[in-house]
Image (tube, rainbow over all chains, first blue to last red; front, side):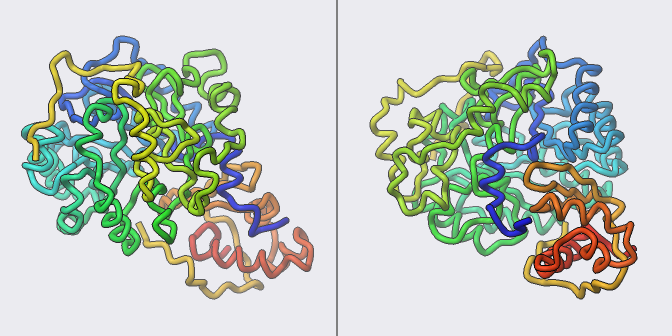
Length: 374
Length: 96
């Protein structure tokens, strides 16, 4: 009967009947090669779900009352059945939020999206100008993203989102991103750079400095209309909690279905260690979510470990599991970007060579390099 | 998307007839339920199984007061009244 207690966060830690935030990556194929790509995308995987398998999965999401799905990739619009898939989602009452680099979002596609009732679009942009953006996302990617935004505006799509991964080079552009979003009537969405996928190779040089993390927190705390995907909860240790659930939702409220149907604990841990099962297994996604050993263990009470004596543990919950894992920090250790600097101390104990490398890589067979050094 | 305004509580008339908003879907969970509004695309948490029953069955009563009388012990009416007022604000329930 108690309406105010216990806290929802505590209840969420025990897991739910179905995820709240389900990310579904449709393909590993991508025409860009961003240096921080979480999924090391590039080449299509021949085992990717067929159209009929994708539709069966959507039917299952509808039965589980998953109200919306976050679609990504790779570049999801590369799939020839992209519209067939999102139309099936909408028909089944599963709303779509999809992320795109915008390169395939021409005037005709923008018109088509504008006619869909229940589709949100996120255009990825990692710099407020071409130089900053293209250094990370590749030459021409800024112009392509801007063109996609122009197309959405021309088609009267309504409010779309501009999705930015925060790096050392674009934190000074926070106000510029906000102005850009205002210019297009868009909503700004900022997310955290993770050392996942190809991000493992570039995190050391791209992740925000300690001073920039403070700057980002101070900026976010005064904004009510900027989305963050709850990704900066490690910064809540600075003081007041940021909007959101403020916990690691991996396997509890969040998971990822990758293009071949593999189910991982979150979008930032595409690694064998966090693989819970496959939607092609008997019992399909529902069984993986409810019964996999991995997800059951993630819902067990966890110890605060090395952070137990820190007065801010309740605020930051020890930070991001993926960020710890890929920087070689024990999962009960501090976040690598712990605002007190404990992460840097923990990382210093692990040689870079001993960090867990990726176990899945679909990068194109050419080296992916940071465009400019600054 | 409307900005959230958790501190603002609209006038909530306990003696009026209310119902779950037709664009809201509920997913029951151990703690209560997720309520998703397909119109404003907001996700709201209903923090007790009893509140879920109230929201679901409101439309079967001539007023919110009648629903609380039937479903909730008197000493808890105050907190449920406040919860329903917040759900008017987030459009999880609306006038019947």
